[in-house]
Amino acid sequence: MKDRVIGALMRLTLAATLLVVAITASEAVRAETEVTTGFTFTGTEYTGGEHYEFTWYTDDRDWRFGLAYTSAQTIEDGWIVCGSLGSEGDICYRRDRELKAYPSAYIQRVWRSGRWYAALGVTMHEAREPLTSTTATFRPTFGYRIDRWSIEWTHLSNGSLRQPNRGQDLILIRYRW
Image (cartoon, rainbow, N blue to C red; front, top):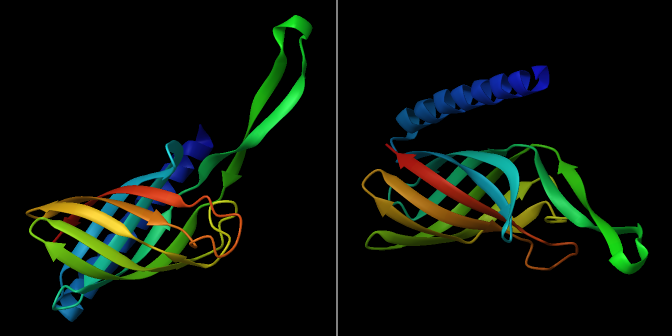
């Protein structure tokens, strides 16, 4: 319980710090700014991670760059055959792997069509084996914007340039000002 409280307080402190940085940077460059939160997946498996971002746009809104933080997550790391029950068959247990939290930075080119948008860019982060085994990953994004809010899907992958490469999916909600 104590670890959960400390973890929650650390995330809250980080979010507040990033918010102050985002507001300050937004005022300094006079560009559009977004704050983002979301969840992590690998394929259809929810990995329990939380994702936070602050994003700044160029004046023409064609490019965006951001700082992000992804919390610790748990991924399925294969199956282990543990033994046989005779006529009942084999017993298998799921083996989970804990991945530590990590910061990242990214840049993306953005294309818009009405409320829909797509973006493609690169994210720099610590190599996240088995999710991505490189420090630079491709970052395709598809989203839908309504006024100041948007929802998007983002995928992080090294494009199978190096294995392992399961990739990381993010479902994100953005608010801009």
